Image 1: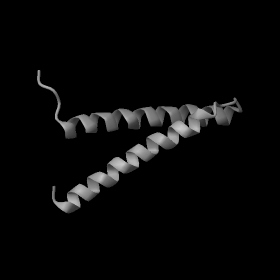
Image 2: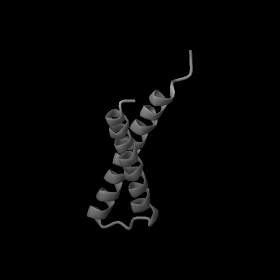
Image 3: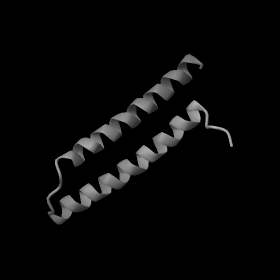
Image 4: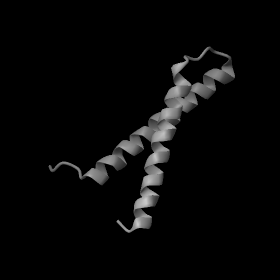
Length: 68
Protein backbone atom coordinates (compact mmCIF):
# COMPACT_ATOMS: atom_id res chain seq x y z
CA UNK A 1 0.00 0.00 0.00
CA UNK A 2 1.50 3.32 -1.05
CA UNK A 3 1.35 6.56 0.89
CA UNK A 4 -1.38 8.99 -0.22
CA UNK A 5 -0.36 11.90 -2.39
CA UNK A 6 -0.18 15.38 -0.90
CA UNK A 7 -3.46 16.63 -2.49
CA UNK A 8 -5.18 13.40 -1.45
CA UNK A 9 -3.87 13.70 2.10
CA UNK A 10 -4.98 17.33 2.37
CA UNK A 11 -8.41 16.29 1.10
CA UNK A 12 -8.68 13.67 3.85
CA UNK A 13 -7.55 16.14 6.51
CA UNK A 14 -10.11 18.64 5.23
CA UNK A 15 -12.90 16.05 5.45
CA UNK A 16 -11.94 15.11 9.01
CA UNK A 17 -11.71 18.79 10.02
CA UNK A 18 -15.13 19.45 8.52
CA UNK A 19 -16.71 16.52 10.38
CA UNK A 20 -15.07 17.52 13.67
CA UNK A 21 -16.20 21.12 13.18
CA UNK A 22 -19.78 20.07 12.47
CA UNK A 23 -19.86 17.74 15.47
CA UNK A 24 -18.40 20.42 17.75
CA UNK A 25 -20.85 23.01 16.44
CA UNK A 26 -23.73 20.62 17.08
CA UNK A 27 -22.61 19.99 20.66
CA UNK A 28 -22.05 23.71 21.24
CA UNK A 29 -25.47 24.69 19.88
CA UNK A 30 -27.23 21.92 21.81
CA UNK A 31 -25.50 22.88 25.06
CA UNK A 32 -26.30 26.56 24.51
CA UNK A 33 -29.94 25.75 23.70
CA UNK A 34 -30.26 23.61 26.85
CA UNK A 35 -28.65 26.36 28.95
CA UNK A 36 -25.61 24.31 29.92
CA UNK A 37 -22.34 26.16 30.42
CA UNK A 38 -19.90 25.74 27.55
CA UNK A 39 -16.12 25.90 27.82
CA UNK A 40 -14.44 29.06 26.55
CA UNK A 41 -12.29 27.05 24.10
CA UNK A 42 -15.24 25.68 22.15
CA UNK A 43 -16.05 28.81 20.08
CA UNK A 44 -12.32 29.29 19.47
CA UNK A 45 -12.03 25.72 18.18
CA UNK A 46 -14.98 26.30 15.87
CA UNK A 47 -13.39 29.48 14.54
CA UNK A 48 -10.07 27.68 13.93
CA UNK A 49 -11.72 24.83 12.03
CA UNK A 50 -13.81 27.27 9.98
CA UNK A 51 -10.71 29.35 9.21
CA UNK A 52 -8.79 26.26 8.10
CA UNK A 53 -11.63 25.19 5.82
CA UNK A 54 -11.96 28.70 4.40
CA UNK A 55 -8.23 28.87 3.60
CA UNK A 56 -8.32 25.42 1.96
CA UNK A 57 -11.34 26.40 -0.14
CA UNK A 58 -9.76 29.72 -1.19
CA UNK A 59 -6.47 28.06 -2.02
CA UNK A 60 -8.29 25.49 -4.16
CA UNK A 61 -10.07 28.25 -6.07
CA UNK A 62 -6.80 30.16 -6.52
CA UNK A 63 -4.96 27.12 -7.85
CA UNK A 64 -7.80 26.32 -10.27
CA UNK A 65 -7.78 29.89 -11.51
CA UNK A 66 -4.02 29.83 -11.92
CA UNK A 67 -4.32 26.64 -13.95
CA UNK A 68 -2.29 24.38 -11.68
